[in-house]
Amino acid sequence: MSIPCPGLSAGFMQIGISAFTMHDQALPPPVPLKCIPGLIEGPAFMGWPPGKLTHKAGTKTQFDGNFAIQYGHDIGFVIPHFAIPMNALCAIHTAFSKHKVSFPISNVLIEGKPLGTYSLAFLGIICAAPVSMPTGVVILLKCTVVTSMGVADFLLGLLTIAIDVVFDLAWNKIKGKFPKWGDNLAKAAGQQAISQIILGGGAALAGKYVLAKLGEKGIQWVVKNWVLSPAVKWFPLWGIGQIPGTPDWMGEQRPGLGSGNWGPKFFKSDPNEQGGGYGVT
Image 1: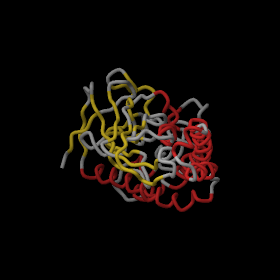
Image 2: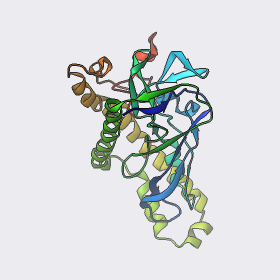
Image 3: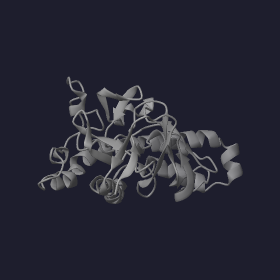
Image 4: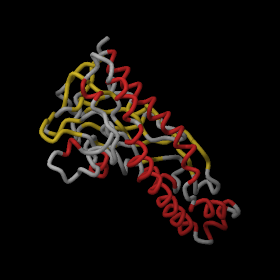
């Protein structure tokens, strides 16, 4: 089996968007609802500037005039989220968004790390509730580099998706221990009629709710994506990498701290040695 795949670059001519996603909604409705389908995430470019913190790209190798994308690249923060109706939590989902490139091409290394791609143009990992979903799609306005993915790399991509989903399931058990500053505001809204909310300053209540949820999610994001994720997700790939004949880059996985090309080593001379694990977020 050989699947044609795009060689991605951190520019503005390759666009990530969701085919399907689902998230919590609140204000409106007054009472938060869980895991509501029908949202759209994106569009956002592969080189989306607000997501620089979670990008994984070469610093010397270029495709189509922009730095080549490595395995584990995440388009990152501030990917627009839309819902019907638009609600206060869309701002939260936008602020802490994710759209990750999940498939490696092991025989094409970008400065020591495998090229990152989609299966054809599908199966990117996007943020969703209750777990991440492999429903990310890339739209190629320009792509002159095409490679092919074999069975082993396809299975590694599926493993990457599975690791994210399992990690999210475990995280859902942990995050209840963190502060829930927005809950009291949501409960207060739920005890009022819509007319009371509007006449009593609905915009102010929604604003306070968004700020409270941003605080909650900010703390959770740092713990989940900067500490736990790179400390844990490296292990399955490292284990497979100990099998003779597997690509060298898998056996070189290490636990770390940070995300994408950023981490404690950010100010070192080689940014490709930064971050932990395989750039997971």
